[in-house]
Length: 309
Image (cartoon, rainbow, N blue to C red; front, side, top):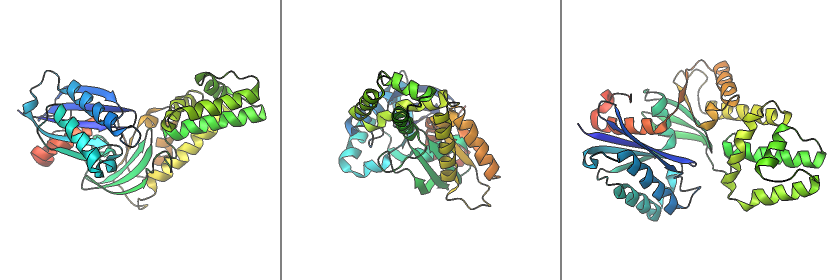
């Protein structure tokens, strides 16, 4: 029996999954982020090879009949030089089947639902909502990246946490969240003006995407006034994003995916908000590499391909 392989290449990590054609998991691998918009393309491509090699370890690579790479930042592969890097990464893991590249949205939706149509909301390092028609992305809302958008994402939460801390240092009104931000940044809280200066310096020393490391502090200290306001705004933004391109009467599934979907209380509040605003089923996707692998199996077997077990 042949194999299929699927990858979920995001901004934070890359996950590869190998299935046989009855949906049984045979191998899995994890590496660093492979979004070529938030990482140097050479590094992103190397992480694809690492994840694939780990997932295929001990398996006969020649039996892989189909493979799908679900990628955040897949539009970057319109650059022939970047596309060539990923093709070499694919071949470097020993694969000889074609590399089919899809968006992370398509992979995530296929993870959460076998339906050919619906909406997927990605709320992780970045944020985007997409309309899926016949298992292909046909429209998007958001997803502009950290510089131009990604509101409600982990990057956005981290940035808002740092901004709230700067305001607290200006006003002399710290709370549990702002104290935690200073601790993680290794900035002494006193004197406040010096802490303010150091925090700005620390935040600008790292790559902008590194602000996402402050995001877990928002949900960990969600009862603090500054954190509660950030969480409430994120829920509103993400729910609006998910529903922006859907007719009010739409009953196709809404699939949620990303680290924030599982972060309490933000994820819980988001599901409640969507349930209150639409009668459509709201589902959770936990492993987008499984959706990518299932789509690879659909390439071989058609719609009868078993869902991953």
